[in-house]
Length: 227
Image (cartoon, rainbow, N blue to C red; front, top):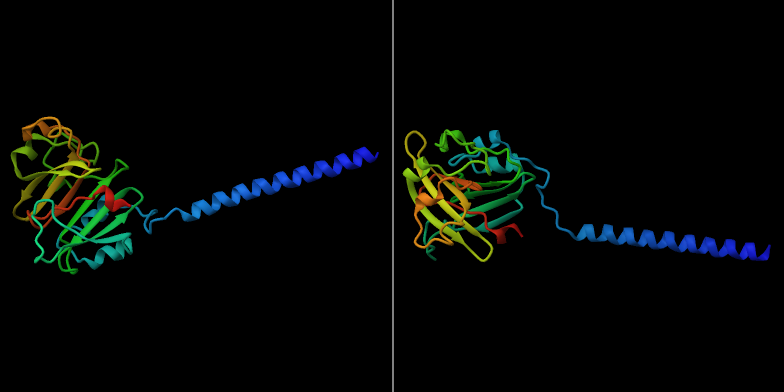
């Protein structure tokens, strides 16, 4: 009988210690979760309809009405323009949304200069008036550079950093829009073919785009900006 009592006590202590250990492990997991930075807009979605309401020259304050405070605000630079210390630098707001990374750029904090979108849900479309490739899907990731984009090219450049390997191709749309669109694709052409031909980019998937009100202005979303 004495042995049974001792065994029961020992068994109870073992169960108690195991429960304490499990709780401690779970508490540690919750503590670690709390240290992972959460973005302000992680549950916010952007839709094709919302894109239409924040195109260039619209009211800059409208963006905060729709999406709230940005996750990050940075002084920016156009990929098509040399930086000079005397010029006023553009300001870009970055939103890390549930289905896309969005950059809104302004020169005067009154009107929108450009919007840049990299989507990852396969649903966001390039606005139809800015995508001349009728035979192609206009959804980011499925949309591709076509011969019409190459034919109407107004600007092009590599967008290369330690972590970024992009290529930008810009088209200008005159009356009645007077806007430019820059298509961004992964650069696996100029990286291996020097000198490259711009025609080699036909059928390259479009990973993102920037619509701006000036053909000197186009803003990329760099990997380091997402941290």
